[in-house]
Image 1 (cartoon, rainbow, N blue to C red):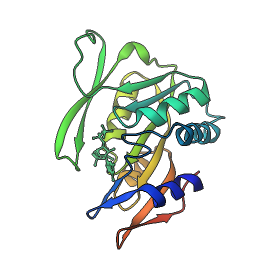
Image 2: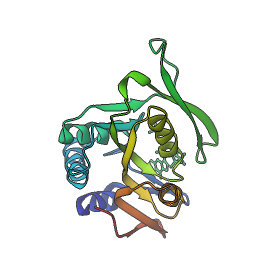
Image 3: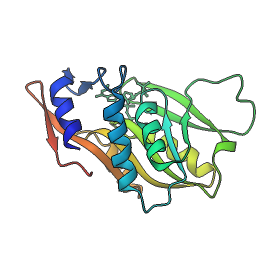
Amino acid sequence: MKKLEERILRDGQVLGENILKVDSFLTHQVDFSLMKEVGQIFAEAVKDAGVTKVVTIEASGIAPAVYVSEALNVPMIFAKKAKNITMTEGILTAEVYSFTKQVTSTVSIAGKFLTSDDKVLIIDDFLANGQAAKGLITIIEQAGAQVEAVGIVIEKSFQNGRQVLETAGYRVLSLARIAGFEKGQVVFTEADI
Ligand code: G4P
């Protein structure tokens, strides 16, 4: 997605060796018009897949995911990271290890929102090591639902998330793919859509 790459070059900040800060349009402040286009592009890419639900993980996946769900006209569900007192029964959970933060957390979705008839598009803001997406896949498959594809806004292709997901047989669709950082500048490789 050319417009997204241009925005990353304009407003993204490279932090250290492998972190890209995009808090002015994606992970903190949200540019709704860019997210709306993100939603439309993902929706177009999966239009023949019969997607019935969009699933993401809080917090920063929610903004793009809600626009994808609008464009597909299907519900969006976000996995929760903290136990919620109103989630009392039929909870599906998975353990997610973050290499970035070096912590394991339990993520959960209420089982009533996913059925074995569902075809799911996973959406997330970043793909690094693929552990968040793997956790979501575990939950979705516990419900007997099918994962149609994993849609990523910004993939860090120098980390192994894509490889982990593709090796396990899942389709990855990334709007921007970062090959690496050279002298504090983002270098892209060809995106999927
Ligand atoms: P993984 O899911 O692909 O394995 O990634 P990892 O555990 O390494 O990432 C942990 C968190 O850091 C995730 O957010 C992920 O989106 C975010 N992240 C990873 N790389 C980058 C990056 O280069 N820039 C930014 N801005 N974020 C990155 P989280 O903590 O689970 O959730 P939240 O921040 O959405 O609340």
